[in-house]
Image 1 (cartoon, helix red, strand yellow):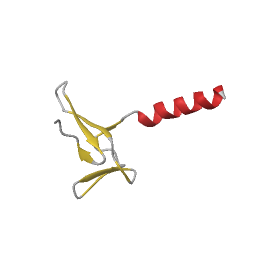
Image 2 (tube, one colour):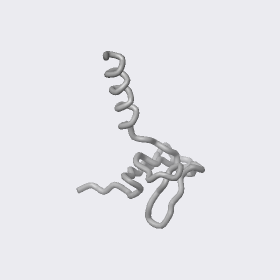
Image 3 (cartoon, one colour):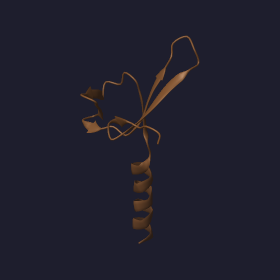
Image 4 (cartoon, helix red, strand yellow):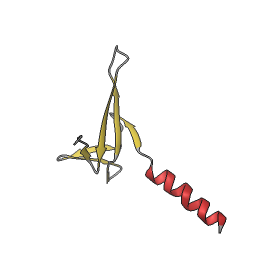
Length: 70
């Protein structure tokens, strides 16, 4: 029973973590207004390093759409 519980907790942790993908990843695909990763709506962060600076742009997506603050 403890092994099953531990497995479920570990699986939940892995499933709930957000993905972080670099801009230009070959698995990212913008179709219409939705962003897909490996054929599924993307939830997570897309990052892009700005050349010649130390800046990194991070855009958060939820279900393929840019997440907006309310």
